[in-house]
Length: 554
Image (cartoon, rainbow, N blue to C red; front, side, top):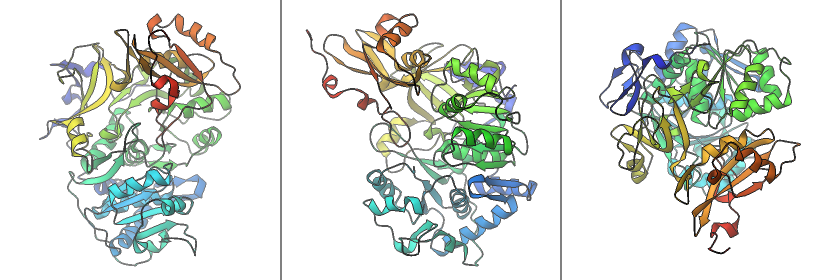
């Protein structure tokens, strides 16, 4: 199944890889980025266009809450919530923090804030109270909205919300905060802002593996272009039915699923932490046509169920991103989802979690180790330490320009200056781009291991190890060595029920990697240490004695 683009429109110009703008009706705008010119002015206008086209179509379905809202019904809910927030003093430029799971309140809060010209700051529901405190301090919200199950985290945080501006979904009568539903009871007409597309619509916090998460300032322009970009790139049909499996507090859930579906005047079906059986049964019962989730979701579905156990024929696109999908699993997915296009997608929080690259289905088997081609409005370069573009197949830092690149980080001028310049975002990802435009990630710049003068890119090693039939996931990092500079360590999680030895891993790697790339230390572990955003904490992979290095003679 073809998607909305292929290699035929790819060009190299002065080290920059891009599509022919005329092939997609793109125009270069004042900041130098290519963008979709005939677009809604802001997020409320994007919603209003869908409302006008299909007011009685299902907009959102929440099977776990036994709830369905048509576009007309959802519009009424958003109007009433916006009125309640306005009565509480929320207006243009104010921030509303949302500590909410995948439930109706999240979606309502996002669109109500957009309608008021306010900014919503979603918070990862997995953070601890200690991690929550600086996020709330950074956002400094006018209103905080959470849910009963998460209110204890707020209570334990080093943060005191204003009781009059703190709302809880399903709030207990004697608990903290006011009832979220009370916001719908003002009876007032909500003010309707018409925010400039450059205004901040949401703050997306990164889930970095080091340091404090940074708040990306995501504009209406970023979100609208991001939504259209998914619609065009995947060539999705009007009335698309999408399944959300990833958290909405991540940009991937919000942009790739919700706003993308809105651009198609479609129906978004929202699940919260669903297991493999619920995922597959929902595809069957809800006639799902598109989903984008992490590879682990597909791997677990294939492990716990059999091909043909569910009717999955409605699924037109099974997209994945956020982690590598081994070539073996791509082949298995073909059998599991025989009617679906398989597409690898890549984006960052700094690019609105929008589509930077995508590997169309026709290339997914031969280019499974890549993250695909740039999306239509995206320009890419691989640059050296002086940020000068390199040529095809040379390793350097991946740089991105496009209408989905955010303006910077909230309250972080130094970090903004380091990561953004002249419309480009410098990702910190090491990559190569081949002559046809296919991008291969080599790891983070800090994930390059230099062993005895040889460069080792951790993703190359991880890809080989995850290809072992007994390996569920793994992570590779370096540790100090007095003679070689660094050595290689791999932490490996076996698949459930499998017994795995270091000897098996070494034998598997020996025929697939240069000898200097084979890890000298293997750790067989039950789980990889991860932060609340699901990213591996590399430093914690190395046992304390090895963190100080191996000295000569040891």
